Structures are given as C-alpha cells and as structure tokens.
Image (cartoon, rainbow, N blue to C red; front, side):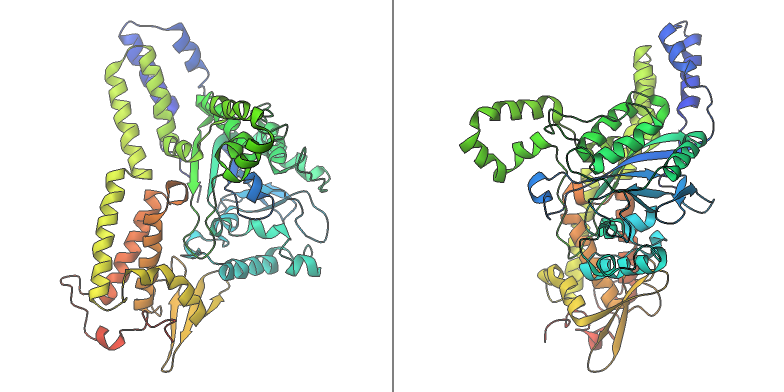
Length: 511
C-alpha cells in the first residue's frame, strides 16, 4: 500500500489545455515552454520531509521545535542501519536521527518501516484505536525483539527511557505528523541507498549545527540540491524542523512536475498528552508567554524585530498546507488553474476549481460535514445513556483510564492489541485494534463504548490533532457496526439481554 495513490495526471491535463489553447488561436510561448518540461520521465516513487509536532518534554518545552525526519516510499530497511529498495508488498520507511538512539553503537541514524513509525505495527489495520504509555511501551518492546536483535542488547538500550529509538515506534500515539512529499526516480533512490550504505553511520549530533533538521536537509538536498534551506534569521542561526518543511514545500510548489502533496497523520486519541504545533524560533517567542515576559524585562528593544521577522518571513501553517494539498490530484488542479488563467480560459478555471473544492472536501471534510457528525454523535450518546450502556456523557472522558486500570493489556504476534477485564463472574475480552475491536470474541458493549470515546475525542480535537475526514468515516463505520450489535437500530430500546448486562462498561472503575 502506498501512502497516497496518484489519481490525477498533470501531464494529461496540460496536453488537453494546450490543445484547447491552440484550437482557440491563442498560442503561448510561455505555455509551450512550460509544457515541454512535462515530457515523460523515468518511473518514480517518493521522498518526503516529516514534520513531527512538539512534545512537552525536555528542551521542547522551551523551543517548541518538534522533530524532523525523512520519508521514502521505495526505500526500505535492511535492518535498522542499512537501506535497500522495497519489495512489491512494502510501502516505504522513515529515516531519522536523534541526540542518541541509545543503541549498543552510537549510530547517527536508524530507518524503520513506515507503518512501524506511524502506528507501531506493520499492518495499519492492527493499529491501536487509542494511545497510552502502556500500549506504546508494549509496541516498542515488540519492535525491539523483532528488529533490533544485535543492536540493542545493553541495559540502557533495553530499559532506558532516554533511548530515542523508541521515538521511531508508533509516533502517532504521542504526536501529530505531517509529511511533505514529492516524486523521485529510481536512479535517485539507488544513488541515495549507495551513498548512505557506504558512509560511516556515526553519531555527531549537536543542537546547533548537526541536529535532526540538518540531517533531513542533507538527505533531501542529496535528491534536489538546494531544495531545503535553513532560516537563520527566524531560527537564530540554527536549522529548525519547521524551516525545513517550509522551504521544501515552497520548492515543491515551484515545480509542478513534482507531484507534491502534504499528508496529515493525527495523534491518536488517548491518555498521552496532546502534542503542540511545531514552531520556529521567532514564532515561539511571538506566541509563548513563558518567553515573552522575560524578553519584555531584559530585551524589550528586540521585540519589534522578533515580531516583524516572524510576521513577514517566518509564517508557515502545516495544517493549512495539508488542507490545500492533500493529494496529487488537488495540487495538480491548482497548477492547471494557473495555466487556464494564463490563457484566459475562464470556463476551464471554473471547472477545475469545482474539482479541487470537491476533492478537497472528500479528504478533509467541510465545516458543515463536521458539524453534522457532531450533532449525530450527540444523539448517539443520548441513545447510549437511555440504553444504560453508559451512565452519563462525562463517563466517556475517563473511560480510557478506567479501562486500563481494570484490564490487562496483551499484544499478539501481529501487533494487534487486546484487553482482558476480569470481574467476579467472568473475564471479558475486548479488541483495541482497528480490525479486532468489533470482531467475534470482542465484548460488544466495551467495543461500543471504546468507539464512542474515540469519536468523542476526535470531534473535540482542534484541526492540527484531528484526523482527516477519510479516516473519520472509517471510525464512524466501526461505531455503527458496534452499535448494531447491542442496540436495536429500529428503536431506542435496548436489545433483549442488554438490561442484564448493564454495567459491564459503566461499572469499570466504580469499585
């Protein structure tokens, strides 16, 4: 499975527009020159800049800088420190470096399968439906046992929280992620593989000149020289993850042939503190009260420069970028609109703007659609209360904590999560992964309350930590499947036998 399927051909549409232009008697030298650059190129895959939101830990509490890494669609791990071309069934990887990976050798970088990086499991269908420290730790240990044999045998690597290989397992459990993607050729990928497999993989990390963003800049510029650049003014002489993402997105938009798109992977709802938007240096000073007050006291004369620098040159909104360019089709439509405007084809402009608006709504949703789901969810919760499945609305706010307090977590060999909840009568099993939560053997009532909790959290989330409409529709379908199992969909009355089992979910954590 690819991260995102290319569904719209810019080349085909450019040919169509050119033909229409010539038929209309409006030949354009500029258009012809532009068209000549769209000649068929060798088969390609993708490379992308990964921008992770900031965690409320360590130095990030002050800088808010987040983290930077590199995504490949056609390069896969041959172990954590060697690269190879992916096989047909594989869907890429993420390569990153940290202050210290904590492994038995001081490696500069590790590479992990894409789904391991995002979800902690190989198959996205096995990803957990909510995130917690307990689940993430279990997925980390599974990864260590399956992938790091011979690299992580020492005590510090196996048990130390500071071993940052852990950050590369199930990253969406603890933060939201953006990936800014362009196309590559197989020759470029092979050259990158040969280069990094031959170079020493030794850690020389320092925050000022060899940080994670500098590493990403080096990798991306190996593909596209000078595509990524630092913003020394707004980042006070350093390279920040956000500057890398901003410069790369601008490079991609200047090259219509790049098949640019920006993907958003939201942090899972759950018990882990929400991540915050990654910021550049002047942006953090501009927004952070913790830093603004000291500057007012000790460096008030610098404030106008900081504000002006950020407002004029430092602004970049990853969430807005992912809404404007969520697919190749939508990005290409934007380029075609520019071409149509250049030749005065207003009919084509309107047609393309309608396509772009509709396709964008399919991916990210509209305000009206999100509000419709909120209203529908409110009615579903009221139904669950009347059916005595949950005692009240506030119960969902603490359900994850109650479930983990009462249950025992298990991770199977495929990475699927389950919870066992024992009471005085029986032990109840409930699936915690997307493909087992409503499967046979998963308690129907607990599954339903889990999905109610997840959807309630998603609908309350700000945009930067809310999943796409495509993903939310999958959640809603799971909720409906779980609902049908325990509630008569033709009335608000509970199904026969539900009254006898009232309290299986609502009773968790009451004693």
